[in-house]
Image: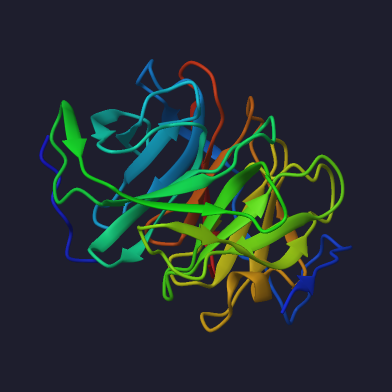
Length: 293
């Protein structure tokens, strides 16, 4: 199967207290989630991050967490396996999320090695990979550029990577057992040396657990998704806002399918739908179609 690109190509403290979206700040009108298929690949059992392709319709990129080697998979939005990509020069300490956005070498995938359950890591990494120009069956090697960073206030466990699709600014949201999660940005993506992340705010889901397990920015920068294992929230956004500024607004809760160890979430390539996947052998790929997103 040869897939080729289609032609359609200062700290803020945020307190959220309501689930409803006002008429001035509407959430997208999304249908209930439906299973579009199941993950076909039996090696993709601890799916931690997923991102929609910027180049191909109905194509996703996904990866396992620390249980796996440094690789990611291409699959369809119905779960069919397409290809495996081994990332050269990378290591998987605890890959937790993936995003797609522009970078210095075009359409890129940002792979976030940011998990730290034991809070004992001294540094973390992003791996920038150029999106493949075509997808052929089999296993392929692909080069990467590593960006290493640390936090100014000690180690953090995190599972959310948010990359602004217009500005390329990288934002990381921590995973907390209680209370608000911290929001950090990276001032640049210099591949040499060690970067220091900057804390720019805090955010807390308006209901339920504070353990955020995944996130995604709308491809036109008009909304942000954050999820926990059992809930999905949407923050409206305008393209001129930063991620932290958008997360200062009120969130709406969207319907989420019942998933085992749910972590992965992404907007579809068109921005007209939301896709989520849990972990386990052959989990369903759940898709919600959305209007006005």
